[in-house]
Image (cartoon, rainbow, N blue to C red; front, side, top):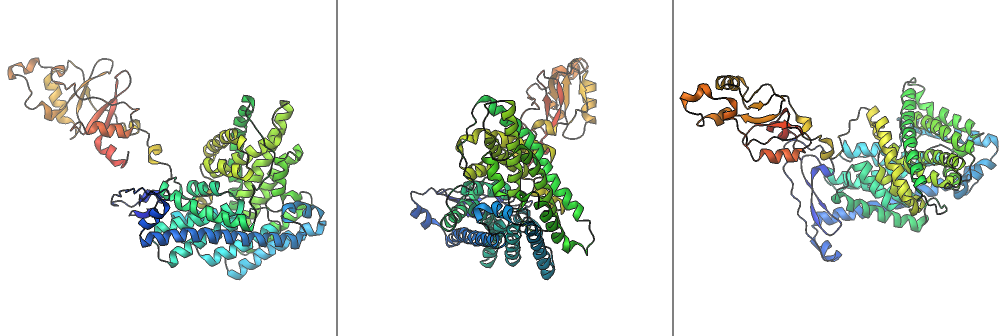
Length: 609
C-alpha cells in the first residue's frame, strides 16, 4: 500500500491499521505516520459486530477467494485426472504405471500432442503462454498493485494442466496458484478495493490455490507470507490463513483428506544423523543454486532464437520430452510416483543420480520454451531423489544409518528452501506434505543451511530471478534492522586531532579551520581519546587572559562528551544524540583509540531504527 496506511482487520481478535511496509516496504517519501489501535474482543460475535461495513465486505471477499480457489483447484485436478486416464489409460494415483505400460509410440506421440496444443493456443491468442505463474503473481503484488487478468490466467491454467497431464515435466501447482490469484484480483477490482487490499487478496488466492492443491493449509499460508508478501505481519496473517482454511476444507471434501505423500514414520535423532543432515543441507544448497541457474540459463538461450521459431518451441521441447521418455518414463508429468518411490526407498542408486539431472534438463527446456507449468513440484523431485542418493550412500558408508527414504524427505525440504530462499515455509510445507513430524529437527537444519548456501551462491531465488531477467526490480524485503550494519556503517575519519599539550593558539587556529558542525578531539601519543574541544563551548569558559599563553588543550577539553563504539546499534547511537547538542560524536574502539566520528544527520537519514 504505497503512500498511505490501509485499514486491515486482524484475525486474532483485534483490528488496526497496517503500516504501509506490511504490504510494500518502500513507501513513498512523506507518507503520513500510521498508528495501530488494537481492540481486543471477548468473542467472535463481538469481533464481527465491531467491523465496519467496508471491513465486513473485505472479510467476505477473503472467504470467497478461498472458496473459489478450492473449487477451482478441484475442477482443474479433475481435468488433470481425466486427461491422464484418457491419454495414458492410468489412474491418477498410479500415473507412472500407465506410462510404463504404454507402447513406445504413445510415449513419444502424447507429449508431442501436448506441445502442439500449447503452440496452437499461443498462436490463436497471439501471445506466448510461458511462465510458471508464481513470478507473475509476485510481480503483480509488488509492482502492478495486484492487477492480474482473469481470462488469461484461466486459459493459461487450463493449458498448463493439460500439458502436465500429457507429459510436460512441470508442476500442476502453477495453474492453481495463478487462477486463485487472478480470482482474488478480479473480485477486488470489481468491488473497487484499494491497491493494498487488492494485493492482499491476490496473495490470499495464490496461497489458497496451493493449500487446496496439496492439502497444506499451514505451509501454504506461510508460503504466501514469506514468498509472495515478504512479511510475517499479523495484519497479513489473518486473511491468508482464512483463505487457506476455506480452500483446504473444500479440497478435502471434493478431492482427498490425507498427506500428499504417505510414507513410513522416519526418525533422525542420532547425533551422527543430525551431522549428515547438516552435510546434506550444504550439498543441496549448492544443488539448489544449480537448479535456479539451470532454469535461467536455458531460458536465456531459448530467448535468442529467431522470432518466427519462438511459437513452435513448445512443440519442439515436448518432442524432446517424448523421445527421452522412451528410456526414462519417470520424467513425464509432475513426477509424483518417482518421488514416492524415493521416499519409500524403492529406487536404485543409479536412477537416484540420473533422474534429477535429466529432470532439471527437461524442466528447464520446457519452461524456457514456453510450456506453462509450475517449478515447485519439479524442485521436490530434484531434491527427493538427490536426498535419496545421499541417504543410500550414507547407508553404505555408515551401516545402521537411517533409510534412504528419510534423507529423500530432507532433500525435498532442502531444495525447496534453497530454490525459494524461504526456509520457514519450506519446512512446514514438507511436514504437511508427508505428515512425518519426527523428522522436523533435521529437516529444519537441512533447510536453513541449504537456503543460506544457495543464497550465497545465487542471490536470486527461483521466482525473483525470472523477474530480474525481465528487468523487473523488486524492493528489498529484508527487515530494516537486518539491513543496517550498526554504527560502523556510518563511521567517518577524523580530519584533525591534537595532543593534550597543544598550546591554546594552535587549538583555536585548528577549530576555526574546521567546517561547521565539526569538533576537535584530543588524543594521546597512542591515539587514545581524551576529550573534545568544541568552539562554541569555549566561549565564556576561557581562563584569565593573562594565562592564555600557558593554557594547553588538556586544560579546556570537555571530558563529558561520551564516545560511542562501532558495535552499537543505530538506535543506541540515536539515543546518545538525544543527550547532547553536538552534531557529531567520537567513535572509539575497546582500547579507547579514536577511530572517527558519526554525524547526527547521517543517523537521521537511516529513517527508522
